[in-house]
Image 1 (tube, rainbow, N blue to C red):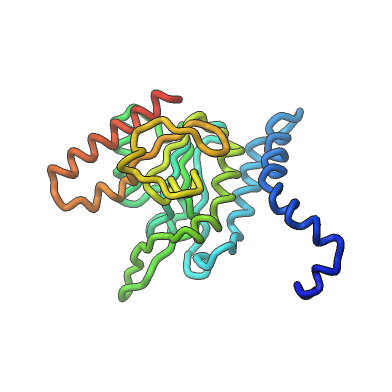
Image 2: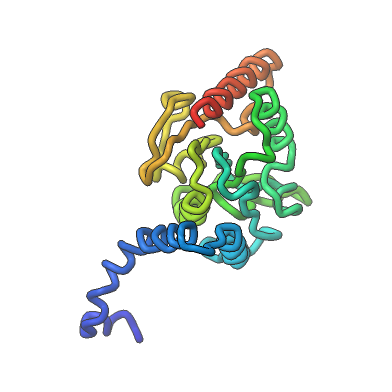
Length: 235
């Protein structure tokens, strides 16, 4: 029915409350799956992943190869949230497998964190890019695009229930906190997420790859490893 007729329908008065309470009801349903006898949290995660494979909430899906969902053990103590898939992630369907992912794995190892025991995902699930010849160049998601994808992160966190969530970069921080977070001010501090749970903000490993100066790259990499150690200590 056309929107102009909604004001004459008493049922439409319920719509704002239904929208406003959607996340709460969603969290309650997830909690029920986790706690009821016979509840299968892995099956719930697989259903969520399957749902995300058909996501069309923003226009990215039209040009991306596929949705790149999170991976790792459901129930992991730590969750790492990056920005978005890169070219190699888009092709493989897995997060953090390109150059930044290799840098990330190396830093995790030096921080004493086993990647196989953490959950890794991205704030945005499709690869946003622009074509330059035959190359697909990364393009940063804007606030509206981050918001369109935010419910996936909320639902992943509701299932995994990590004791510590690490935001890798400004896009991830905005997705988790729902607002702009200054990395220079908040980096390395223990924070509380709006919907509960401890969090820490640090740089995205791709930032380290972009540093032109070798000495600056070495110093920033050491800081990144230190941030990962701080996060691990908070689990």
